[in-house]
Every structure is written in structure tokens, then in C-alpha cells.
Length: 405
Image (cartoon, rainbow, N blue to C red; front, side, top):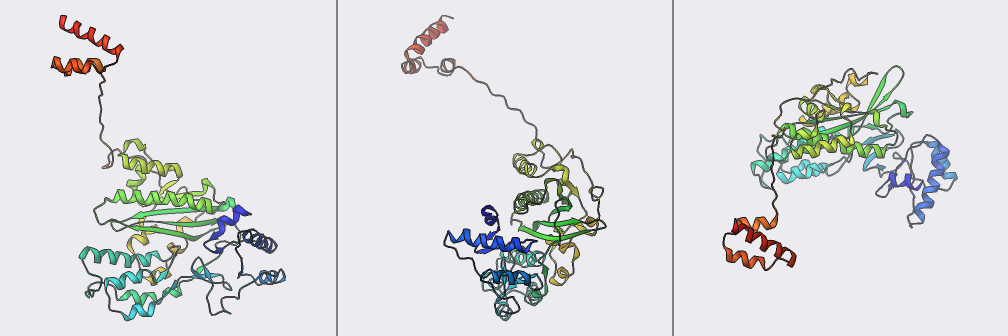
């Protein structure tokens, strides 16, 4: 129980899901007992089940009102949680102040923090403002300089008002079975962004259902970086997130992971021998192959790749109705996806392939080295005094032999 609680504690919150009401009440009592030894008082318990609420009250646990009965919204990982509908929404603040200000680079930077989105649910929408800030840095705008009309920022505060309409189900699956759970991980890159997206996929007898888990992205550096290099960085981040999710969700089995990319260049590389590439690429490829199996990497069309939404950026209205982002591509929901994944072999030519080189190293005994490279007999005599007694006798014999010859 102690180990389980450590994985379910986030800052000062304990978040857990169970199927049994009795088990949930028992775990609640054990959590209070364990954390009380560290002088931590667990209180303000809340849930999405009225029956559990009554059982907590009967066991004298301090419970919190539902989200509809309280003026203060419930928070789950800083997301607004409607526990009656069991739905999540992204919290945003200072929206009115943002819309009343003159658009500047400082106002644009403040706009980045308006949506509180720890799981990066809205990243196809929020990535646009970060790309705008990067563009302002490149053009040399000061913090308080008004933005010109051609900079597309005025639509951003207006679109933020629709963020509260984005509702995400808190429940992924009604029944979680290990043998039916699969995880689809997709990565993508453009000259502006490299990113990754993870989705759950639960198989059923006649169909399959997918759900969004998490996404991550990084803006590309201002210096020029090749697209294959950015795709490599996105795949490294995907492999690292794979390790994190495997620890967070013990139900995920190693064979149930599928990795998707719309770059055939990278898929050629991941299925080849790492030693063929330059040292930087070698190290990254070795890290990827330690955490993932190259056999599980597949090719997908860029139009159906969820990560492509991040590389381009879309409006909040298009994001709300995008099934590829919230669930999975339609062809991925088919029962057998192995035939859909196009397998690739290693390519023979690449800019990242290292050039063949040969190094010849010669070693020479120290006493012969001194005799050959020191031409002055006086310096040679002075150096010989610093040799030890055994080497001195051997060295003197060698010098006399050299002069006799």
C-alpha cells in the first residue's frame, strides 16, 4: 500500500481509481493512517460516486461537496473536475485582462500561461502562441512595442473564450483488461516543432475504442536543424515517455506498445545498425532501442498522424471536433493493425551516415625514442642521469653499441 500511495501522490493530492467501493474505503483509511505518521492530514475527500460519499461519511472521513454544490471548483492535476459528470476542463485565468490590453510581446508571453494545461490536452491550439513569440524574438520586437496588424494575435483572446467548452472524459474505459489494452505512440516533426502523442486503445469483440493520454512538444531552436535530426529528437522523447507511462500504468505490457511515424527516413534509421551513424545519432538511437523494440515501429500517413496536428497548429474550433486527436485515427481502431503498419528496411545512403576512417597508432620503447630524437650528445648524457640505476646501465650499453655501429 505504501508503494502504491507513492505513485498516486501528486504534490499534495492523492488521486486513485478503483472498481470496488469497499476497497476504496479501505485504501482511504490506510492512506490516512500512513500519512498521519508523517504529520500529514488527509482530508477533503471527493469522488464521482454518491454511494462512496455515503460510505465515507459512515466511516467519519471528511468529505468535500460536489463541484455543483460549491463555488470553488474541484481540481484534479490543476484541471477543473466536474465529479458529477466525471469530466475534466482546462482552467484559464486573467482572460478579461488579456483581451483589454494592447497586443505586445509581453502580452503574448502572458497569454501562454492563461490555459493551465499540465497534460498538454490543448497543445495543437496553444502551440500557435509559442510559435508567435518565437517569431517576435526573431524580428527583434521589444517587450512593450505594439504588434503590427499582420501579426495574428487578435484572434487568440477570442478563441480562448471557447476553451471552457472543451470537455474531456475522466474515465478512459469502463473495464480495464490487461490482454486487451494497447498503447499507440506517434511522433512528428516540422521545421518549427517536434512532438509526440500517446493514446490508449482498448479492444472489444466487435470493435475498438481509443482515448487520448498525453502529448509533449518542443519548439525547434532558432539555428538551422535538419528535419531528420528533429524527427530523431522527437523519437527520443517518445521513448522516454514510454518508460514513464510503463511505470505509471502497470497494466501496459511490453508487447502492447506500437510506435508510429510519418517519416520513412527515420524508420529506415531505427531499423538499421546504430554503428553506421555519426556518434550523436548513435547515442540517441541506442537510447531508443534500449527502451523500444524496432520491430514495433510502423509507418503512418501524415494526414492521419495525431502528432501532425501539433506540428501545424489548429484553431480551437477545429480541435474540439477533431476525432483523430481525441481518440485515434479510424484505421487504428481496427482489430488487426499489424497489416496496416508498413515495414521498412534500412536505407543505403544518408547524410547522417558516418564516413569510414582508419587510424594507425605506433608505439616505441622509451629508451629507443630518446636515442633517435635527441641529437645532442650532451643533452643525451644529462637525460641519462635521471634514469634509474637499472635502466642507466642498459641505456649506456645501448649508446656505446650505437656508436660502435
